[in-house]
Image (cartoon, rainbow, N blue to C red; front, side, top):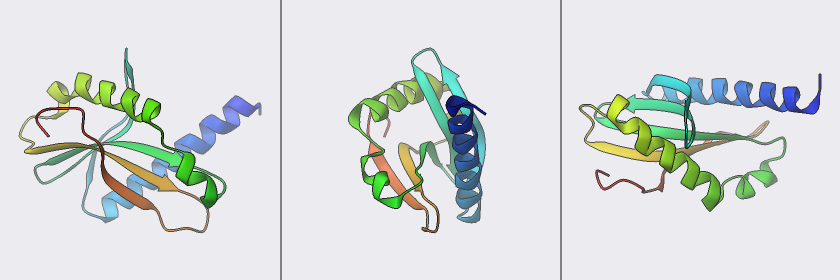
Length: 121
């Protein structure tokens, strides 16, 4: 397996773990890996009247998680979320961008409101 395929497999595994974590905390996964011309959203989740576009980051070392999110990546997720809000946002009172950070042998870290791109938020 080449490096790119291995990274893709790790990413999918991380997203599956993130989806399970969110489900265990009362979220319903509405969509996975939604691509738009301006970017991609890893997970779209809903809990009650809250809709979250979730960026998932998996790192082999927990120490690397602090650098996993940067403004450029979050901006790309924000643009994709703006493009998708019409599709998934019906009935939502709160629309936000979250991040879920994962590393082996660590509890997942769910961070709410990591970026606020939309006036509806």
